Length: 378
Ligand SMILES: *Cc1c(COP(=O)(O)O)cnc(C)c1O
Image (cartoon, rainbow, N blue to C red; front, side, top):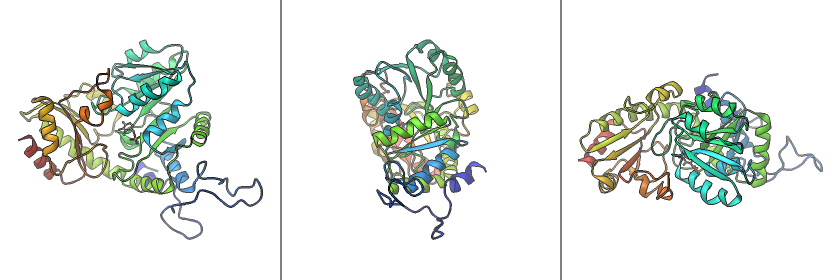
């Protein structure tokens, strides 16, 4: 079946008892057992297994051509659990433009437990080849990145990583692209990682995370950690993400169509210094983006000529674009990363420009969005 059909049906059969077409929210922590040590259909306790979560996990796996989906309480909970595959002394090679919260977790949490991190510009895969060490266990890519929209050639990095004698795992944070625009596992990655809070949920009403893998042994190790560490989402949250995923393809197409128009208009605006959007010809990885993504997605970043002050003024002046963190919902959002989402990168190698504005282009009418931005820029 095609992606659009899987998004609506995968993992979800009408309830066998009642015929309920939508997956029930199994709001239970425990399950009656048929005898001592004989749980029914494997359900014992909801940290380990819950039917609503199982439906979501199966749907996530199906959207990436099969394998195993694992849902977590947040995107960073997914990241944390994946890092628990490692042991003290192991090395992680990451992009130098990863999400601020990922960087903060790597540096402020995992480093204390003896993991080592190096950050390189992954847009040139040669930098990855040079920075791999005998103790590298995970290569952590994000593409496109938050907030600079940098694009890395996943297939090229996968070839380098898998040819290395220490056989690290390649994890790709695919939050911005979603499985609809980009399929990391198909391109050679071992793990696709998501903040489901963003486009998968799609309505800014739930926090969640996920990992999708193909290797059954890796899936088993992650499922063990998911249960042993316990950062799982509740059934209501799983239901909300399942519902969000049903419209993912139509939403992403609209987000991208509007974003491309807005990016082109911004690029021609006299107050704008530079526009970052993967499907603009001016993007430094336009060719790679076109090759590995279905469209450019809904995220745009741009710098203003008037510095930080101008960025703050524009972000505070829009009316439809709401000044808020997060992204990927049906409503348009605007923010200044250096002062908001990426404050934790200040003074580090990952610091973002102070005059940068980030847009999450929603699915309102594009003419209203353009008018709102033009007025704020004016
Ligand atoms: C938001 C985000 C995360 C973290 O996800 P949470 O659900 O907020 O924990 C990770 N990566 C990217 C690219 C994000 O945008």
